[in-house]
Image (cartoon, rainbow, N blue to C red; front, side, top):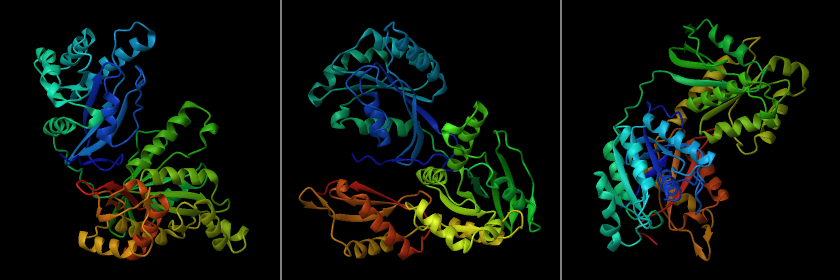
Length: 452
């Protein structure tokens, strides 16, 4: 059974997701299951009790169903302070989840601590799947599961190391998790971020005061964050002004730290991010770190050189100089969109909205599979195939995901052989063929099942 599993971008526009928690004693395979279902290595796996100390949450999609998967610390009756804290944390947390996957060790058999875990889980009243792991042979399945039938729960025998039985776990989750309809949004959400004192709020006020905008200010409840609906040329937007993002070492108090987290959350929830830079100062390494955070969240982004009226007065060949600085500081995003504005002089506003609309259009681009694969096979002939060991990587096809901005999956015989330079080569050609300049593109590589 093939597993179709993909991480969802945080803040991807879906309503609150169902929560599925994985619980069990230490070292029964909880984190291994978490990593399999999230297609990641975010949970540390080690043959040692107590490695998972914190609750980890990862939004995932499986077979069209979306939910938050939660990895919890191992529950044990050990009397050390750390073990007691984990048990209290997990016990309290389970009442806030929707579904529970309890993992137990088939090799070790049913232990008293397992009974305590099921007792805790049943007290929540939530649906429970009992997964008996480490059953390495199908012939042992019935025998090693026998002791666990006393709980009267759905039981699946598995071997996570061999990926055996994982499909049945997935089927149970998919059956339980409800469909989550997309939230209907009539406006493009734009987050304005940057360092302190670069003119974000002034630019925000400039946009909101334009004669062509119909404005209804709605104050947000988060620290230093205000959502302002506006209409520009009959198009709807939600503009979010955020707290200035300083280097972590420079954040002076709890309020400023909270503000920074709220700004980062605004990035995750945005459709497009405006990175505002002081035109008189130019881009800095801190701006580069903010840009990297935006790209990690896979957001459309535009650099806004504000205070450009002063920049033109102070710097000879100002725009050319600024572009050179952008190319140097943002060397990892060579075609980042750039707009020059002045909140004080009210210029560059039309250029900014023109660029917002261009990025909005391109971030939603869908390319037909036939057109995409015609491009793909034409492009990979232009360069030598990457090599994995002593074998050439063979590509089978390319498909587009449903992420925005566009992301693509290339299926190949040896995906580990596709290095970053080859990905950049494909991305460069994608941008040229489909006019995606300035749009952050992602290429994932997966092994094509059933092919060598």
